[in-house]
Image 1: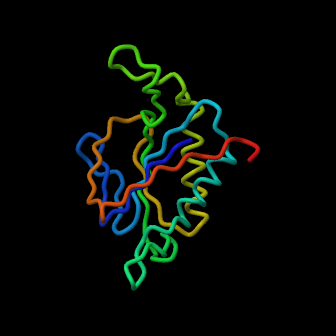
Image 2: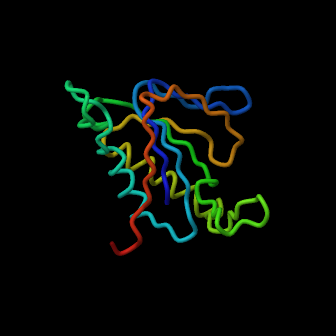
Length: 152
């Protein structure tokens, strides 16, 4: 499982022109699920995101988490995060390691549930839909996190 976390002033996601999820100050979290990912990894990664210290303190240093600032999260599934560019044929990346929707959708939902359990208000996109994501990246600050392999 891989997430791309972007610190935002605001973010929203539209499906067929209608806003289906939005957040104010907080994080836009793009979530990609690989074939062998587990519920435990989804929960652990959500806890890492909630506690990730990428918001400034009074001195401007990264020392506050989403929980500390009372921020919100917008979670959007994105299977393309699992692309393997090293195994591409021509210019097309290999998406073979991405989990099928029947596996990925419940793990994205588990990630969302775990983030909510950490006290974070969460809205989401629509799994599998063609989505238009808009954001105001604050900083900009963008962090990529991968789930620890099972058993670690």
